[in-house]
Length: 300
Image 1: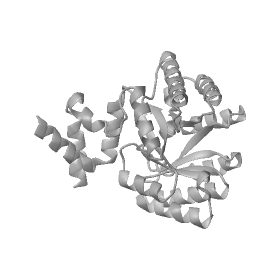
Image 2: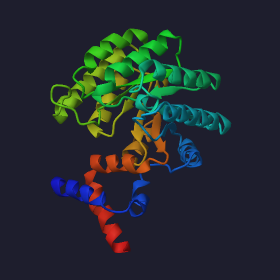
Image 3: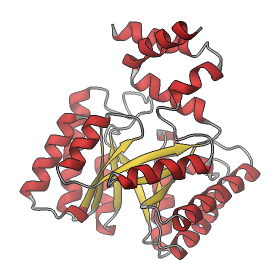
Image 4: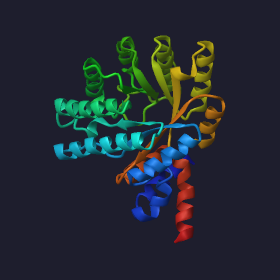
């Protein structure tokens, strides 16, 4: 059945974007910053935090990278102006890391200075393995520049992640720990679900033991329950960690975590590039494809 659902996702990509959009918006706040502000405010009212992502990646010109910096600046301004409990997430390839690493560093540094003025925080997302080393180098350089309002992401399915965490824990990193979503070769990433889970918990314990602030980013019930046990055993205070989930995913689990007294932050993407992002979400959750197709055909 899973294979059939994946085939249905492929069929979805043949439909005009306009037809798919209402279903795609399950995972995206909207096309405008106003949409993101509205969604973040709704989460704040439910006692949830947010991190805002301006959709887009892999820019090829410096002009596009400068536009990303400007968009990030606007997000930080709106967060402050509207007194939202939120921060900003950015992708290095959107800020020019493939063009020139020094150029990317300059762009992100400029944005962090703006964020510091707002007493705000910026999370540097992790992308595919071709940029892992450059992204960690960028993060470490920014920390050396004196920025404390910046965090990084570690992907548990990457074979290198344990060594990366060992190197980073002395810096008392603020890290989002996730499984990882990019398709990688066997020599780079674990493929087996149980291997990924074991590595996730190994890294989580390492980070907790080092008293690092951890954003536990997962939609996996097994990992949530294991994290609960770690938190209880280590007697961690609620401001020493948070849970994170994607907008539109596992809402019942999300609400249960909040009801259990844990802090929750929702990843809220918005922007003109909603189609590529939502299709990636469909591919990760192919079981919803039949419902989308049924609705499309019934409305046609």
